[in-house]
Length: 68
Image (tube, rainbow, N blue to C red):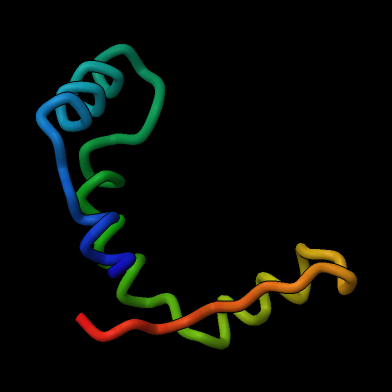
């Protein structure tokens, strides 16, 4: 589900990347295209480590994997 949401590319989003890259800020086209490879590398252990390191222990976080 996250990949599907992250993978949606609008014309506006693509135009922003192309224009901003030429202006020298924001992500480059290579970074924009590489985000899908980065997402494939994220593991459940990465998510657990991020939560452990960045969220106070008094907060509750539930992460679910849903079928496609």
